[in-house]
Image (cartoon, rainbow, N blue to C red):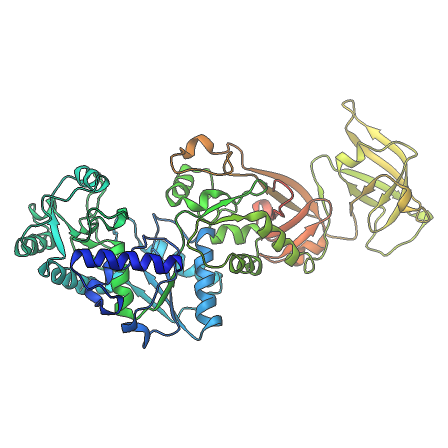
Amino acid sequence: MSAIENELLEIEQQLQSSGLPSKLHDISVDHCVLLRRQTAGDLVSATKTDATASHTRGRYNIKLEATENGVWVHIGHAKAVFLNNYFAHNAFSGCLILRFDDTNPTRENQEFEDSILHDLGLLGIKTQRVTYTSDYFEKLYDLCCQLISDGNNYAEDADIKIQKDNRRDRLPSKRRDRPASESLAIFKEMREGTEFGKRHYIRARIAFNSSNASMRDPVIYRFPSWDLEEGPQPHHRTGWSWNIYPTYDFACPLVDSIEGVGHALRTTESMTVTSSTTGFEVLSSYGRKLAKVVDSGRVDGWDDPRMPTIRGILRRGLTLEALREFMLKQGPSRNVVSMDLTTLLAMNKKIIDPIAPRHTAVESVGSVLAAVNPSLGTKDVTFANQIYIEQADAASFQEGEEITLMSWGNAIVRQVTRSDDQTVTGLQIELHLDGDARKTDKKVHWLAAHGTKIAGAELWEFDHLLTKDSLVKCDELERYLNPVTSRSTDALVGSEFSGLLEGDIIPIEWKGYFRMDKPIGQGPSGKAVLFKIPTGNSKG
């Protein structure tokens, strides 16, 4: 018997003990909540009942909470997103539904809703319908009233701490056997927002002594926990129409049934993303921690290339092809998944390597203008009698030494001019194109000083946001934030950079792969801005 079958058998046994229908195909929409034990974010394949199988064949839905603690779509969501899209459109001829589970007005707003729609578009996800749990608030209220009338829900006024302690100790609530008529009257006062109503919340009467903590009479309707300073705020779609809201666990399966959803693959709150070689951190498992990073000013926003949001990682240079391939290889699972991002970055490098033409950039700080004697050899006019060489290379030269100028040929260093602090201020080199590049120790990249339009560029490298590979739930974020996470190098680039557009990916000789974030003329002081792409074998 499979794990899912074992779980369903346990649910049926619990239903039998509670007096509710004992067969899954007998469960009506009113009792659907009692079947769906998965918590928000648990990655499962939802089992269809016989009652819905006939009209839900091939139907799949994406389940992303509208804000998930105010977080934009991040790499931790990508698995569920790609898997849902794959099963809906590739494995089956299905319908993909994007639903915003906007059941907590303290966490949702239009900005994050718009960002999710935008980011799913970036991922190439095609949805046939966009719906909202708030579209069904009236229906959910009516269903809760029916459950109360049937004796399956009750009004609770115990202090939250006492309620949690009782659930932990598997003790029944003193209000568990409250008359249905009394609970129903209280529920109506809750809807009206009276002071008496505000002292209550609604719990499902399931199995207070269940081995599964989520089945111990969970809260299914409540007043939001508003910020004490700001006070109550209107729901971003329904305004002030509602004082009380259903919990996600109550609303989700009911709306699934109403919309005819047959399957769902969800993200797991336990998913961790760890790697010792990349800045795409385990932060993607921690929505609130991500928000704190943004609020602290350590990054420039949700689309900062150090952030594990979809916009952030795409801006960093990760390709959709690599992300999609990596996530689909993970496959659906109910187990905690640890994703090795070294593998993801290796996939990405494999994709970008054949399509990215080589370019040259010379660090501008301390760059040396070298005079080249052209009389001993001729070359294309793009080669000049003066070239820029990086200070680090020039400082290693000795007079009389033979070096190789990459993509040109060998040359002999005739003169090295140094300042008092030994900084190289000038070079005289003589081409020796008959020389054997295999016999030289120094292979030097360079940039022509004439015959091409020289421009400035900023080359950015990013380090880990965290100083710890993997955070646990109790870890304080502030203790593990890396104080320095970025470094910029000023460089000189040639005219070939002028044709590059935002999003273009190129390898720069000796420096690695870069993504063009701001083309020439659009960055600070007209400079180009490029971000180094991590490949799994370096810090960047």
